[in-house]
Image (tube, rainbow, N blue to C red):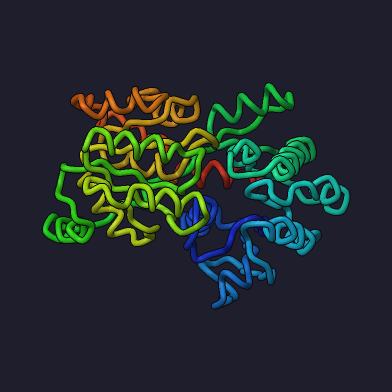
Amino acid sequence: MEKIKVAIVGTQGVPAQYGGFETLTENLLGMKNAENIEYTVFCSGIDMPTKQSTYKGANLKYVGLHSNGVQSIPYDIISMLKCLSGYHTILILGVSGCIFVPILRLLTKAKIVVNIDGMEHRREKWNKWAKWFLRTSEKMAVKYADEVIADNQGIQEYVQETYNKKAHVIAYGGDHVKQAIDDEEQQKLIGEFGVKKNEYALSICRIEPENNIDMILSSFAKTGKTLVMVGNFHNNVYSRNIKETYKSFSNIHLIDACYDLRKLYALRNNAQFYVHGHSAGGTNPSLVEAMFFGRPIVAFGVCYNRYSTNNEAEYFNSASELEAMLTQPRKETGETLRNYAETNYTWKRICSQYEELVSTSKK
């Protein structure tokens, strides 16, 4: 049987140690059902210094740039140039380098599939020039790719309305967060963060303005309710200012970014409820992951979060609404959310959808 060779472009690399696209790639390799698919993953030679040549049956190739920040643009473009021939499909995750896709379209016979992520150009952290560049890259991706992936129905609707093109909705998986840890060890792990079972709310996020960080923290500061927030508090001026502003509140525990799945499992599994403030993007991995723990979820009321939770969570649109919610008993929505996640957000399901898309021939 002829191998279908698929190049994956746009991630930091594997083994996954960064974000959503890396976790997606990790699971695509680990849950490969189709034996005739052969993956090659382009990785950052700076961010992934061990430089393994293979991983979980995939070939790894390296580009000597950082995969994030300003360098993500040449990083993605160089990766695309390295897969002009020898591949049936090029899977591009994110739009950083997609301003190059019209040229890629001319230079390769491969099928081009792009996951456009979550309308990156709308994020508050970017300046006017960066927003223009990302919007242009998104436009090039949608116009010149053979297939477009949206991770959320809201993104699919945006692509249809903005570009008159149909996108495939494929979300993210979240069941990788499950761990086998007994209750005694869980209590020990959450004790390291100064909290006890069912006595705190949890939020796990990047400390960026569009995630409504200040709104969430000010609401907990005013109500006195206990919150554990895990994030990158040393990443930029905004995040450092946030930490400086709220570090003195005894009911607020600001935890630097943690990638230890056992500690994260314990925090999620013992929280009273989960708070999700993201206002931009589509299906956010941390929200999907939280749904697997059967806890009520309080989320910012944008359409992306409503679609992700099947409109079964509680929603706020202002600090006053959130403050009011914090002083009321939570609705018992946790099991409904868990059941929805178990049906729709398993990696087995997500990877099968990706495999079908990358293995079919160009139209």
